[in-house]
Length: 247
Figure 1 (cartoon, rainbow, N blue to C red):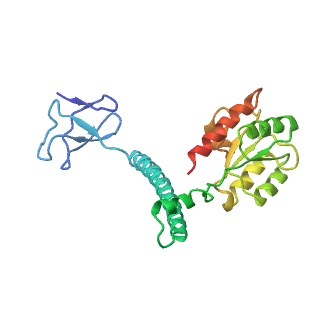
Figure 2 (cartoon, rainbow, N blue to C red):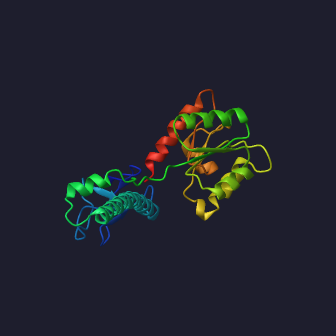
Figure 3 (cartoon, helix red, strand yellow):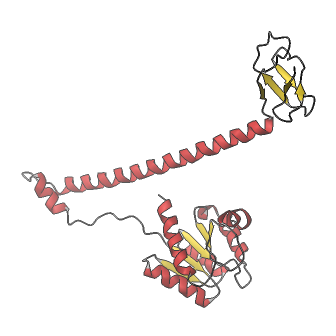
């Protein structure tokens, strides 16, 4: 009695070769028999295992590599945070050592140190690019209310000058910019500059963009918040989320 191919269901009755491989006469799939290489015939009920194609092997390797790289990036972020904390601790210890005098107790040193200026992390900033004054001002007002440092410009050329002057962490921009430089031109210019590679781009536009995936793959942005009534507050919430994702 023949066994069936797991791919197409065709009957497979050929004897396995020396390596235990069988080729399906129906679809041509190569399969590995669970029987040993000493088996001269394919016995009924012998389980067949499809041999993966080179494309399947490559896809599996790429998926494994992607997972590995994600873990490496996560580990690197943790390492950077640990190093930052170590630097801050060292600064505190150095400050204590400088304030210590012969005969002073540890509590005396601490009491003099507690009023010293604390090291603060750099506050992250946003640049808003929108040729429509009403939409631009609404986003700026919402960011100011959330205590997020923000600058605003009305064109792509002004945006490039502002980024060159002080690189923001996030650029919020309309995809349909007016003027000589379109929104796509601005994105391409940012992405083409190595020093700005870590700048996140969030689209705030009425141009139909269905998802963050489309924003990334079709437009080169990182995310999308559709422009609509009340969308400025949604945009601020998303910006804060992006800030929190970064080390």
